[in-house]
View 1 (cartoon, rainbow, N blue to C red):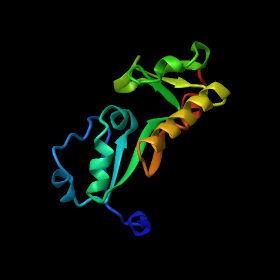
View 2: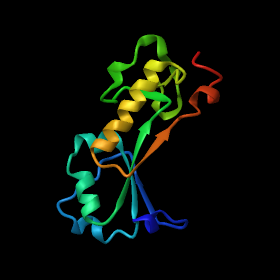
View 3: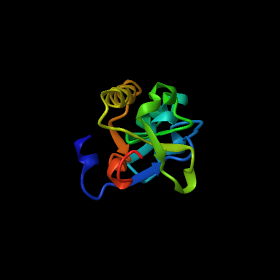
View 4: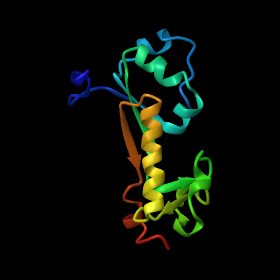
Length: 139
């Protein structure tokens, strides 16, 4: 398995829609040996990771570590005082910075990592970890 993580490995990044398959054969022919998928999709579609692994793929689970999105399953866990301004762009009003210095946010992120482990992710892809500095603070 370690050889699959080498420099030059082929990746497939699928974040905006879940991988829905009928069989391992749907994935086995994919040239990518590593799939980066959304943790929320992996939690919702329980067969996604086992199907990828049965096809011999490594799985990285993406999650938002520096922001909360309106559709996050644990979105209600964030206290109001740690949620900041919108990241803007195409998700204006739907994705907000969180104060990553706050222990409560750290605990939520630890739970996200635990969830990734529990569904079989081989690694995690924490996004927006620089969100605080990108926006000059939580606003």
